[in-house]
Image (cartoon, rainbow, N blue to C red; front, side, top):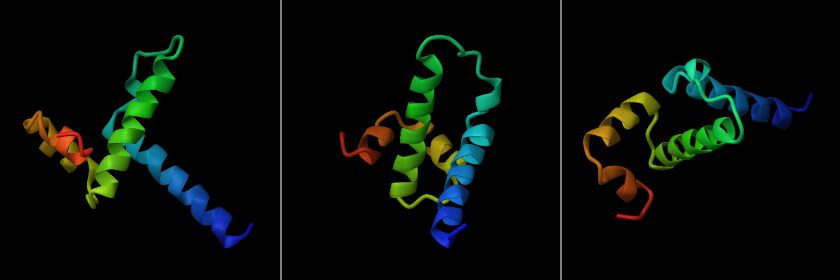
Length: 79
């Protein structure tokens, strides 16, 4: 397997790990229709926005953004 494919696989595994641990994905009760896909999209958006902002620790970034309702909008360039 080429190095590029290995690195891509590791990035995917890292994202899944962050979603599983930080967002408690396995404990989710959403299992019907488009709900699981929708929540995964919102989780990925949050992770991507925090990573783009340069945050290394996603859980800490989520807590910081939760304390100020305007901060997530500013992070996305909407506020």
